[in-house]
Image (cartoon, helix red, strand yellow):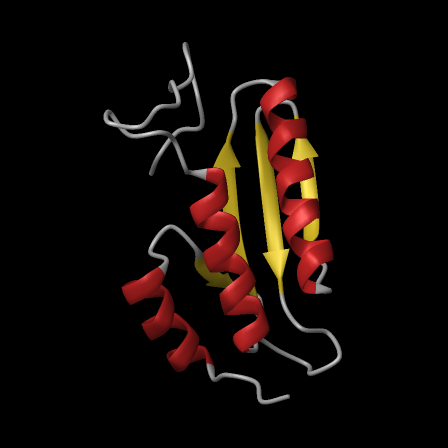
Length: 114
């Protein structure tokens, strides 16, 4: 599996996922949840996506946040698999119903958008 250079990763992130960053050789994202219930919900959603993709990020769970580290260990760096899973995670975690959707949006505080 082909790994991407740091410059390629940073360019891709700038265009596709500006809230993610390259840090110490992995993709990094922190979601500020503000409370434990939402931290667990986010972790479970990420777990579902990761398992479906057969690709497993490192997660650091705390009371107010979820930190994600993504890299393809077997390839020795960041691959298309990491970028695609990061994109899927971002769209899933930040999704909310729109004003014209039949679904209602959440009441109260939700994940902070950066």
